[in-house]
Length: 188
Image (cartoon, rainbow, N blue to C red):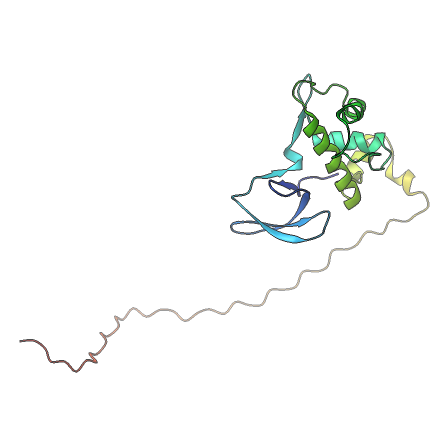
C-alpha cells in the first residue's frame, strides 16, 4: 500500500490522487468522482503518507492503521457510514484497530475522517497490500501464485534520439544604426 500520491486538499471533501505536477501546483484526480482539477500552492495539501495518529507512546502512520483496518474488516468497507455514525461506534472500532490511541488527543472528527478515508481508498482499489507487506507477514508470494506463471515484461528498447541541429552562430560585427525615417528637419 503506497499512499505517497494520495492527497487531502483543504476545502475538498474527498481524497485525491496526484496526476502531475505543474509550475504553480498540481493536477489531481478525485478518487470518488474521477474528476481532474488543478490544485495550487495556496491550497493546503497533505499527503496521506505524512499524516500520523497520536498513540500513548508516539505516533502511528496512516499506512499502518489502514493496514490494520483492512485486516480486521477482511478487505470490506465499514458496516456504518462514518460521517453519520455515533461517536461510541467510531471509538469502539478505533480501539480494535489501534488499541493504544491517545484518548485525549484523538477526537471524533479524526475517527470519522479516518474511516471515511478508508472507505474511499478501498473503493478506489488503493488499499491492496504490496508484495513487500505480504513478505513481511510470512507468506511467500511463490506459494500464493500456486500453478500460475508470472510473466515478466521486458523493457521496451529506447529509441535513439534525433541528432540536434545547431543554431547559426552569432556574428561579432556590430549592427548598423537604423536609418531615420522621419521627414522632420533637424534643429540647428
